[in-house]
Image (cartoon, rainbow, N blue to C red):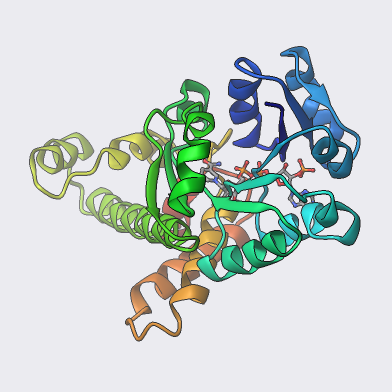
Length: 285
Ligand SMILES: NC(=O)c1ccc[n+]([C@@H]2O[C@H](COP(=O)([O-])OP(=O)(O)OC[C@H]3O[C@@H](n4cnc5c(N)ncnc54)[C@H](OP(=O)(O)O)[C@@H]3O)[C@@H](O)[C@H]2O)c1
């Protein structure tokens, strides 16, 4: 089977490289320069999404958002070339967006699965992403071997929309927990408490989460360069969570406050930096 891989950004590139090491793939990216490494790994390169899809049976999308998916896939020429193929959408979008895309894809005679992932570039390189799948059980079974290249145990969450919802719930936690940790760290520093002692107590407590240690060094050193997951994407996912949850009746004031902090980091020109730059927005001199 040949797979078309559309979108070789920060996450798409290592995921496509993992596939290319195991099967024939044809890759497309809006900015062709980002395909050079993949071409060197033996992947075929397509000049347009249409060319990539025509040459393949399955189409994997790792694009920024629903707008990018519409630009690349859901225009007349490309959409109709999907007939008889399977589309696996792996970026982070809302359940509502995912179901709308499914409806358009299914209407032209293709199958659609959503398979958002938890984990970042190191996990993508190691094939250790957590792959959450929203699909019909039969489509999940049929594509499980393919998805195992990204993570050893792809998990069927339920119908299309459920995996997208779970992914947003998890990213809401990333934003909220990182903000909570950054606030306590800033407070500790201002109160003259030793950071090592703070971490020692935290690590021994039920409050500890491994992500705190992963972000500690960046926050203490103010080094947000070379991100795996940039601040702009966490703001995007926070906005997606808020858009999907606004009619849920849940109290959203905590995540709305987190959003203001992320927006402040963006105003501080930290958009392309690691999302631990939340600390800089909380802990301004
Ligand atoms: N980075 C992570 O740790 C991580 C982890 C889990 C999930 N995700 C999710 O995975 C998705 C991809 O993330 P990423 O970090 O790889 O993002 P990224 O580095 O910004 O890559 C985005 C990709 O989308 C393409 N794109 C954006 N707008 C487009 C448009 N209008 N038309 C055509 N192509 C367009 C980009 O093409 P160009 O190269 O031409 O810009 C690039 O291939 C996002 O939904 C993100 O939230 C990311």
